[in-house]
Amino acid sequence: MRPRILYIEDNFENRMLVKRILMAEDFDFDEADSAEEGIQKALQHPPDIILMDISMPNVDGLTATKRIRAIPELDRVPIIAVTANVMRGDREASLRAGCDGYIPKPIDIDRFPGQIMEYLQIGR
Image 1 (cartoon, helix red, strand yellow):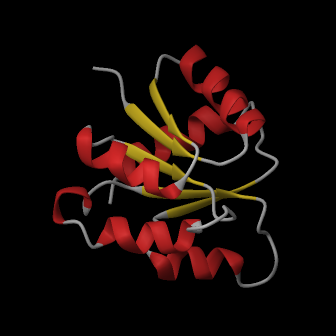
Image 2 (tube, helix red, strand yellow):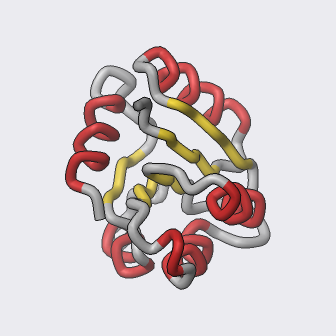
């Protein structure tokens, strides 16, 4: 069975890049362009892993992560921050909010599928 990924990201180009990379590796891919949409999609069809942008308008990725962590049906789904927020303390803030991992942007397109597989294997 193909791992189902939900990528919550407001930037269209970033979503398309990640989609192309992961679909080429035979992942089942879903996307949302806002935190609100992502939370709804996760509830409707729980993914195996959520990739979360941190800097989004309206509801940011840290707040979205906290909201997802409060939903019992989604508590076991790993959430990985995929973000350009790479200043000192950003990784730690993501982990404190409930993310299980952190991948800085720009992503390394050669390493990215392997990183996602590692997080899938580790789980939550």
